[in-house]
Image 1 (tube, helix red, strand yellow):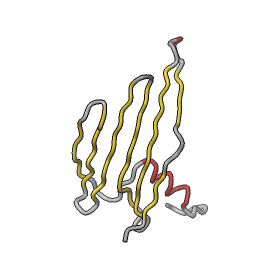
Image 2: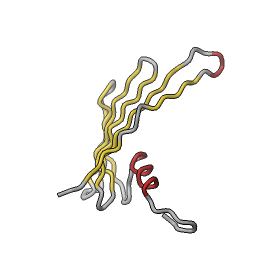
Image 3: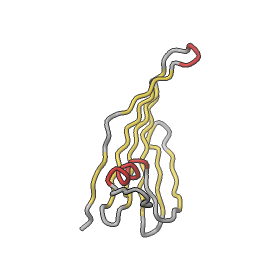
Image 4: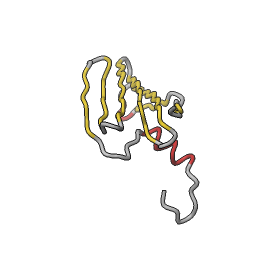
Length: 109
């Protein structure tokens, strides 16, 4: 049986009001699923919103075949399969790893 965890942070927001243009908003929501032992990413789901545009993307990681399947679900369905070499993580599993690492002065993680 595979142990897993999910990381789902709150929606992040950023505003860009540069050059006197009307404010544009960007929101990104990312969820990751990963194995605990060995620690590795299994799936990433992402939603990006910018003003009225919304993109829904996902990625599935096949560690036996060393391939990741990436898909943009909307608004423009597309995707691809890419080879990878271990170790591979997404942004949330990297943050999770470092947040829970037993860091000590001089220790290399």
